[in-house]
Length: 560
Image 1 (cartoon, helix red, strand yellow):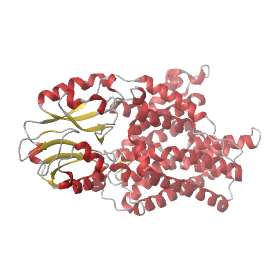
Image 2 (cartoon, rainbow, N blue to C red; image 1 turned 60 degrees about the vertical axis):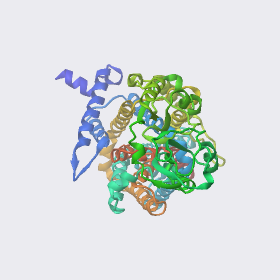
Image 3 (cartoon, rainbow, N blue to C red; image 1 turned 90 degrees about the vertical axis):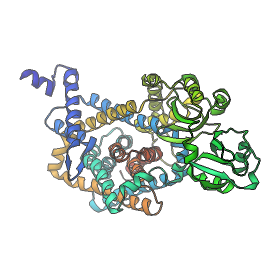
């Protein structure tokens, strides 16, 4: 019994209660929390949020770990979580932001503005101090950097004084901030009468951002005399659109490969691959769409997806490889992070890309040797870019940004910095021959471990003050936090659906990112097989994090 008590409650003679004690508590909180999260009530489960509530229960009954160790676990877990997200969505992030990201960020700004307006309104209605309300607001939107920024701003204003009600308000409002956000996303599904199957099928294809991140294959018969005799390269310059011609059939003959120098003539049939947004214009330019089955099922040509695993190919463009002349195949599309990209000549390859090649069987076998196609190579983790990126992210998050008229600097923090660096590395790493690929299973493991550590740390830190505050009337703060959580998400969700016509899965990703709410993203990602929630989350998260931190500081500086 003495051994069990020492393991559960720690030993005063050891720092932090002892290593065995800390590991045991953390492991039990995560394991029991995951089991709790799997339980469903009326079809709804807590998911990873169950870890938070188990952590609160452990802390309340005295089974806790050292506060410094707990703080480290919480922040490091959050870094792992957001960094893995950044690596996953990095390749498609800038394309998304360039096309549809402005719209998504406008919606995120609306969420933040509504949250601040709701907080200020409650401040005047309830008469509570702004320090308490800022703590409640930070907990309601699950924004730990905002909490730290508010505490630092108050300390700087009052020469080192502390405002414990900021942390207490955060701890009280945080649990319902997590659950309330998830419940609001669920409520939006019923309120907006979402057809789950239709939204799943359309996920990632309804917005301008996502239409550039997929491809469509179709057969076209050349009937426009204006393009008769022109080469594929000349037509590409004329159309000002990227496309690939996989095969060409002349006069009803057998399909053959085509390249940039192939001339097209009226009556030819081609198998065309292009982005969905460009299909209509290309068909109008070339001729008319016809049945693609005869060309697709031709026995002389085969189509195969090949995995790029040779490090020396990382960062090379398709035009540099000249696979048409060296291997006798045509690359029709590139699948990267689950997204199909048109195989344009200036597209840079990355380790882990899956290229679709078309050609005779012997030529395809030659292409396999060129690209590698060895899954074993990819299973070996690339730790250098991960930890180098985390280090750079921490440095970026620690840089102070001065804004005119604001007496205190603001920072991206330990979440915003690593996320931005991960996106940049995921997008531009291959330019500098940096291998950033991680298998999907490795990425998911990194993500799940990170969010589990984060929620365990938050729960263990909130438990001691949670129940006493409730008993002293602090339960009202929970209601205030719920209002700050639900009202902005609900109003912005309805606005985004009806005004911006956003897909439901993109919408809930944006709302999760605007709330800087990793558990809400984890819930959103579980609802669909597409990357739409993650792309939406990562598109708005950096700006939302900056605005959340800035808003918490401004409220303290103005009203505190």
